Amino acid sequence: VEVEVEVEVEVVEEKQNMVSAKDRETTGPISSFKLMLLALMVMQNSCTVLVGRYTRSSVPKDELFIVNHLVLVTEFAKLILACMLEFNATKGGLLRSIKENIFDRPLDALKIAVPALLYLVQNTLLYVALSNLSAPLFQVTYQAKLVTTAVVSVIMLNRRYSPKQWVCLVLLSIGVAIVVLGEKKDDKKEEDNSDKPEQSLTKGLIAVSIACFCSALAGVYFEKVLKKATTENGTARAPVSLWMRNVQLALFSVMIAVFQGISQGGNGEEVKPFLHGFTSWVWVLVCLQAGGGLLVAAVIKYADNVLKGLATGVSVVAATAASAAFFRVPLTGQFSAGGVCIMIAVYFFSNELPKFLTGGKKNVEMVPMLPK
Image 1: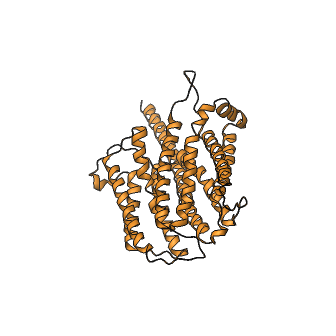
Image 2: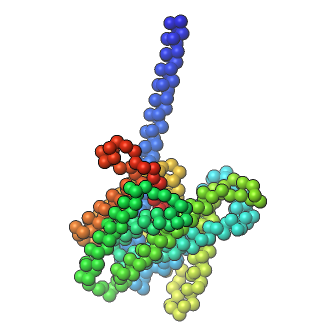
């Protein structure tokens, strides 16, 4: 009996050692991978804003690229990348997947035309904002999309938020107001520069506000389409893959951008050639924008909202510091105070409060939702 007990103990200990070794084997690489995703997200978010601001403010007005051309090229690049990923996911069955999910079911594919149009308007307005706002101001004001996304989610998805999350939304709104009010005071002191494009704080803030609303409406609608069960003739069928939805989204975006470019061609203004003003930095911006969509998809699949919240806050700090260093943008105490409020609100909206603030109790169940 003693021998049997010793054997059982040895077997249990061996299993425990195998489990702990497996845990050590998985947690290490996963943590490193998430850390890599965090670094990539921070770099992508920060570089997109900085490069976008540089390309819109460093050249004379007549040498600026056409925003519609940039959006068209970016969406076409996203379409190619999404097709490559769908080809890999279906093991070479890309054409079959396109036939089944676009040509055989056109009404289902048309659902994606709504967020495609909204994303196109959002991307266009973001470059209008970058042309009129400094990189730090754009970064902090664009975080208001968290508020608009929360409100739209409550209306369209009947989503509920905890009291802590609503406090974070109020804190974020206060932080944005502090930053904007401080920027308005400094805007009156700026001198006009005839060699550079005209900048308007009001125009930039209006563009950011509409872009935040478009981002919220498109994101929530796209989420609703992705999570809604798909049926055909009353019977459930396999859901459309994330990559195929991205193919549909990019395809409609390209079509809308082409139509927009054709409609703008006969408005009486001087028609500039395609890819006019596309410098090497503009192509870098295209790569950043196209790769950003794939990066978000990777974060959704392999990480969580904790990572996204942390990356958002860190990217604001990184872009602000880089803007102050490279663009000589002065940072006032009012801007810093508002920026801290925004980062705190964004982070704790999707993360639990420290235990010493909650008395060791878990927070009320909340919905982690950061707009992408």
